[in-house]
Image (cartoon, rainbow, N blue to C red; front, top):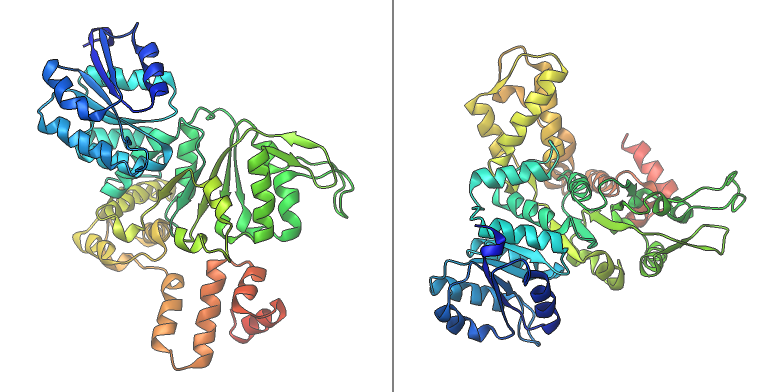
Amino acid sequence: MQLKKATVLVIDDDPDVLTAVRLLLRPLVKEIVVDKKPENIPSLLRQQAFDVILLDMNFASSIHTGNEGIYWLKEIKRLKSEAAVIMITAYGHIDLAIRSLKEGAYDFVVKPWHNEKLLATLQEAVSGKEKGSSASAQNTANSLIGPDLLGESEAMQDIFYKIKKVAPTDANILILGENGTGKELIAKAIHQHSLRANQPFVKVDVGALTESLFESELFGHKKGAFTDAREERAGRFEAADKGTIFLDEIGNISLQQQAKLLSVLQNRQVIRVGSNEPINVDVRLLCATNVSLNDLASDARFRKDLIYRINTVEIVVPPLRKRGNDIILLAKHYINIYSEKYLKPSLELTPKAMEKLKSYSFPGNVRELQYAIERAVIMSDDYALDARDIIFSPIESAPTESIQTNATNLEELEKATIIRVLEKHNGVMTKAAKELGITRTALYRRLGKYEL
């Protein structure tokens, strides 16, 4: 069916939204009916059949959970309407919007939307294209992401839906997940499918920047601003102008650094070190951290006003141990890559190798799996990888084992604690020493003592 032959019903208690949609669709569809009250849905459906229903997820002014939309979606299905239901949601309710897909919604749109995207979604709906099958879900995933970000698990499909919906917007996104889960790959996928895809993507590991380098790296400096400032230099925000800036490990920056970053995000201006002249910047902000949102929200650790600024939409990347058969999917993917790289024959995984992979907890997540497969391919002299060929990294398991097996040995306990804290801060000595409550000099002495 063509869009011009469609009958559309729009339910939203915002009169501005109803007016905008009516003006947009009136010349493009056969008929458009709008209503502010979802309570009228049953009578409207009894009066006539609709091809598409645009349904808001929030109606009561004092309640903004999105459950109202889910309730009325179920009512539409109970009334056996054959209309394709497209949910209307805000950035903060994307998790609920994904739930609506499982409840039978055809799709959802995020407001404020781009008219072209809304019209494309409506056209797909009236054309009767089915969504949600495993084949189409995988095609969606492959079209959205790069070759290294794969997944058929429900958790990853939810992430792919989120990427599809938030990428075309300018929403600030916070990506949460353990080390090695692929947060940077997700950030790149969001940029590549955004309206800024042809503009710069600039990554900054802000957790590794010292207090003295933070401003200079992010905001730039004037010549002579400090001892080593031999020439004028633009910062990363200026380099990302019109594009996307990805601030990795943002959970590790100090309160002073947070205040400086918040000022830039609020004003959309940077001031180079040694200058008083503000420079306008237009960037899409993506952030990532391995710190949980609850820990991040602690008053002593991170400013809540900055959390709200960077967390318009939140994407939580699951650890590999919770992704089921994705482990085997990714293992085969890396086998193909490294077989070609090291000029090996096409290798298969034996059943015992698969069982070993699926039963392992992967504390190092996808990164650990990648390194384990690479090593196995290099060392293999056969046409198949068996369980004995797959050796997991002792780096990931050593700290936990030390704490468990030598809990009564103070030296071993101290050694294990130092290893764990250094890994947490990616080897940044200043941050590790601060968390351990000792000086950097004392930390260096202990590193020598334990031969770390």
